[in-house]
Image 1 (cartoon, rainbow, N blue to C red):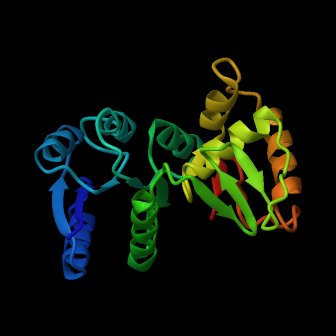
Image 2 (image 1 turned 30 degrees about the horizontal axis):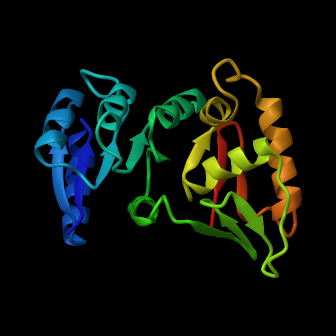
Image 3 (image 1 turned 180 degrees about the horizontal axis):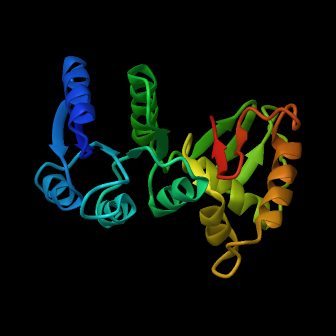
Length: 225
């Protein structure tokens, strides 16, 4: 039984989620404040967190940072904030996905299944498929099905490696720039666009209509296996 922590201060949403999740076999724990969420999470370590950003005591982003200090459980943000800055800040702090209120329960359940499925993938899986191309993380090698090597520059490889180690996760531009280029490059979005274009030309069957290296406009990029 998957243990889910729901963090929200709206009673109607909490009640609806509790009923729907329990009916589908989830073990549900609730918290109405950020402080309570961190306490409940420590007592009953969650396998998934559904978190509202607008809590009465702590900002939800601070709760994400607090959780990320000790757990890799996927965090699904459920919030009425629609500004992209809020979404990017939550993703940068360590959230895995973002659903905007009002939401449909079917969409939420689908997002939950997706983040749980991704979290169950071994992040150290040595070989990842990108369509008909094999990415060997251990050997740092990219090959066609025929075994022929696809040559990547060191920067192209580093960017690809970060993406494929987080399958399905929306990676914020700022996070990718910091991980690949280092501190001081957080605003160098042109670098990111250029190298993503290079990777698509080398790895996607149709670079103009990518199926695996996807752009989330204004937010970041996502690798879909």
